[in-house]
Image (cartoon, rainbow, N blue to C red; front, side, top):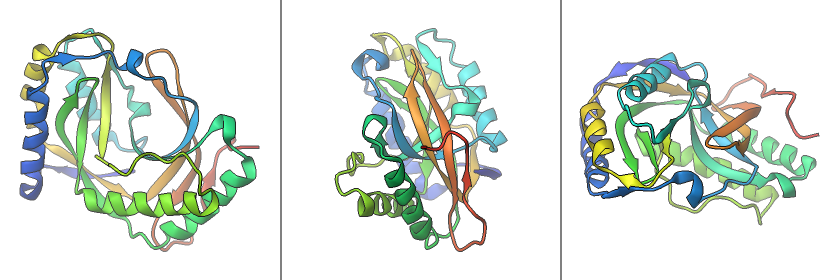
Length: 238
């Protein structure tokens, strides 16, 4: 993803951001994200932000102004948006992953590139993150990728249908009262958003490592009609 500028949260989406903040305000207790789940190594479709300096700066500013030791913050190079799951590593067959990638290239050719706004800091009992607007083109892209996955593997372990586009910047590592986090988020919620051009999607291999998620890009796929070939990294399935 590439930066497309900074802006205030679009008026049409302000109500959604306000509702997200109100939901966070209603939380009484945070929970330890890491004890409530264990993420099995798997392939996922991600939006990645390695070239989005503005996203890195926005995340870093918020992280630096949340002086709470019970959050494990996401490093800039690991910021991402999860679109869908493709396959667990223990079940992944290399030829099937390649076939899914080929189907995704074909489907993504029909999805024009689009801009999204990232901002409006909020959270859940286990994490803090930004919301992304508008959700509709992200849902359309997710649907195209899911259709590609299921066309090759009808039994693929895709995520459930609910989709709330977000970029997590930190995960809670303790069970503690929520009010200090709410106070910190309230101070930062109204920062300007950053606009990002979505012109590719990435197949990644994700692993949970201690109190963090690490992912490696397998293939970068362009979206929209383009002659640009996919970029496959050395960590692709053998």
